[in-house]
Length: 251
Ligand code: ADE
Image 1 (cartoon, rainbow, N blue to C red):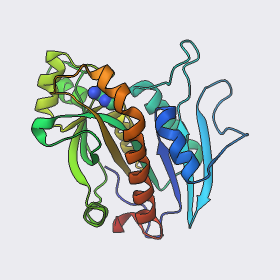
Image 2: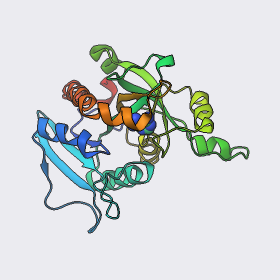
Image 3: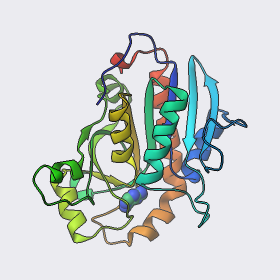
Image 4: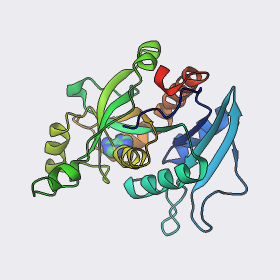
């Protein structure tokens, strides 16, 4: 992941959150307002909320509703696009991708847990040709935040990303090969763009469902979404309070 560019305190952050239900509590907590003059190209559903909190300019980017189906634009394509566009337009010192995830109980995850991610990789980009296989997996280290993890006492784990909420057997083998504790639909895509453009990125994931449990994933996810979002919102607040006044190398 990108090296810090300067020793100045972090002043400008971009938070990428895929779902409205996840984003709204953070918008409310920091009293962010929707930018009436969107920095994004006309016609895209992407929304920028922004505001000042302590010494930080906070930008929260929500990819918005898919124009065709009307649901949140979850997944790797939208998250990569908004991360690229937000970095170009807003030049952040740091990216935070926050959201919900599935967790493996066999690796210590429980519903409501918060994880800071150490590594991201994809589990649904299978290209069985030498070196293309590694490109497909696209493993990247998140920006390391040893002081943050220690101070906030948050679990650390690896994240595997794919464009499906459910999991095929092939996905499962790849997730195991990625040594992942949590599974989402955006993280590795955000990591890819942040790495390309050399912006440090960190990942805050809250567990809504147990992948290796006996409940159907979609049902468990929807059942826990509201309560786990409260835990996520609290974690994002703690992370932002920790970041305030620090340089990236102090994280
Ligand atoms: N987000 C929340 N739960 C998830 C899961 N099981 N898979 C992918 N993304 C998720």
